[in-house]
Image (cartoon, rainbow over all chains, first blue to last red; front, side, top):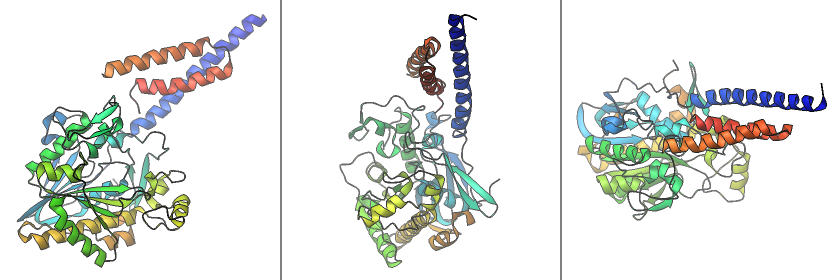
Length: 381
Length: 47
């Protein structure tokens, strides 16, 4: 074979080799990415009285990636109606899992509880870019592990594209373009808007249709972020939040009160109160796995919450929460959410007894802290 | 809007694939292949 022919043959061979490599990489990576589209298994408990979809409140949402299950737990005695929202930000697992835990365990004696565990369902179908976040994490139960997706903070760009350069939300707030996909910046939503805006609009419609009087939005924040271990409240819920905080402090749980800024538009704790007139609160727990100071992201960091860089940052006084070698595990963060919800419901009963919501068979914060959430979750099927 | 996205990604993908075929250097072909994986996944809206 001549030298020229040999070189051409070698080039053709490497082209075929790389083409095959591209196809194989696409096949395996694509298969992995597509598994993120499979919904998480949630098994509502025996207290469930109605199972709906968010699209029942806004029919154009039906069949879109924004549609999501809505679980209703209604007691026989009349009382108030409470909305518990998890998964507004799917990279904040304590909020999502607390909503799942409640959906799988509670019975309502008085009033009504509406639970939406995955408020931004689209956000669960992908991971935050350039973060190296794990796609899933496991919660051990006595019958084996339950596996849940760790999603991204915002709606999947495949479902909503492109982002504007500057986003002006329905409240008139000017924000960075990416915030157009952040559910907690687009309230009260738009019926004919983007997917995220339609989800927000549907949640507002749910609040009105179900007669919600108290909305609790479950979140997590980075340990270096000042709004942490906090109850953020709309002025409609000031008395309720203050009463709950005093009870929590008496239990030895440090919760700070943060008033919802009236000029910060688009957030649940602002727009639920302004547009729907309900008592709106947002609970924050510290989550090292989506902070900026963390080391290697991993499923263990999500669940166990241990990170030596955060430990160091705490020693240097850079954090707003204590952070020791034991970290802040998911069970502790869920326990804080459960304690916060229980204190808010107690305060609701104390302030407006005719609108009380009484639950039974709710796992206590102390029990979840001691035994872990897997003890109370439905076994995997 | 989705069709515009597909067209942009398809154009970039074809350019990169053409580069992969035309390029003589092994490592430059490897670089093109790496980029091609991402573009191909984007073309099929797999993220």
